[in-house]
Image 1: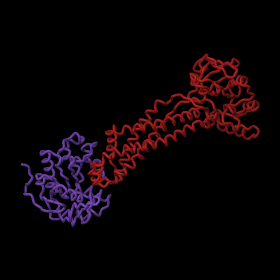
Image 2 (image 1 turned 135 degrees about the vertical axis):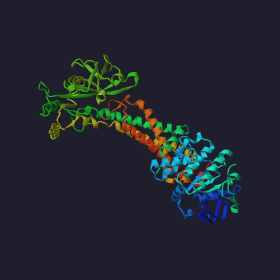
Image 3 (image 1 turned 180 degrees about the vertical axis):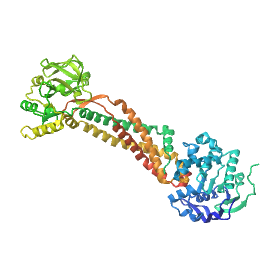
Length: 239
Length: 387
């Protein structure tokens, strides 16, 4: 359930890449508010700037101009070590390619962000177990990534993203590498996290079916917001 | 706050094939250096294990070895009857005036010639070294040109086997016994009667006198008494202290060990660096993921330094295993103290193993430094987008 207060506020956000003589404008003065508890899908053709926008919101890239506020923090003003710490407790990142560490088990992968928190091992075990329970994979905790299906890997990645209980989840084409069934399972998990746990979700996707799980769809083209649409209640709910 | 140890350890194990060449190079470097250090340690062990704390050896002041020392017969008699010298049940002083000469002997198998120490001992000489035991045959009989030979020396020189004969100058000597000197410097010696040795080798004087003085206070008093007489020009030392000083021969070997360690380690560091560049290259995206999860640069860097160290540690352990068969192998070299053949065993001590492992770990850490620095300093977005 979205509240009216924006948790993410972008002001005149501009990102220009300089590639030799060529200047590429990835984002061109974007103004955008995302309320806490919203599930926003960013859509647009390749090169439209949606991934750049996501990366700036997640604090892994910096704007050329403009401001990116998350809560009371202007993210682009943080230095590298402040950003790392901020990401750890504020952002849960879900990748298209899952990005699990291949030599670690599902449990150890999920535990990774918690190792930075100073929590006692027992408390860490409880939190990891809870996160794996939420994504329905507690029985796979000792499995290595290569021993799991793509859908299971992505759910482990979601558990890793939520284990520190961050208020915001950002997902970069989370269903891009999955078959239809696994994609639906992953999207249902994200929808549950948005609906029940109140997580704000910002998701980049090319897939209209995945986008339909969001409460708002934002279309970008050539670095500009060109259109917003709200999905109908229950949109994305599997038939 | 670090990356889990299992992360680095498993990566080393999982990717062992691609790192095998580096591990092997480090293993060879460690093995070579360890073998040289074990050689130096063997020499030190054989000399420092020699000597009984209850014995005092008296040699000429300034002499570097017994073979270059002169103690006159008058001096030897005076030493024997010093009040500190212990006496046996018959009331005779437990003392051995000894002659040490070098004999040039042919090695078995036509491997050239070398100097060997012949020690002429007085009747009490055996009682003063109870650790030296007869292993085969019998002890020599004075006046019959008989000798006993160390078990380590016998197989290395022509005519030194039991019941064989060898020539030294114009004299033919019979080997009537083989003794075991349990890792001491006596393993490099041939023993015969002291007076016979003086006669055979035209020595008017003795080389040294060994006396039994069990009390440290008496040893000090004796030392003071002998060394304060400027005319005597004698040096009195407890036996272990004397032999501990005879480790010059280990110096050049130890230096060679350190020199090779220093030069070969440069190559090993580059090998480790090469492997680590390949490793971090393959795992750049993984690094990007860790950074996104909140891991700061210093932890990423520390993790790769640790991983390089572990990789090299595996090489170090393999190097120790390669060197292990040399442990306790008997070999010989020329003593820089007496210029005679000294027989000793390679001795790989726990401390040498710890040093070898620490050395290998340091190679890994040094080799990982630049690759770790490079990958940890990549912008997050560049790292996570790496293919």
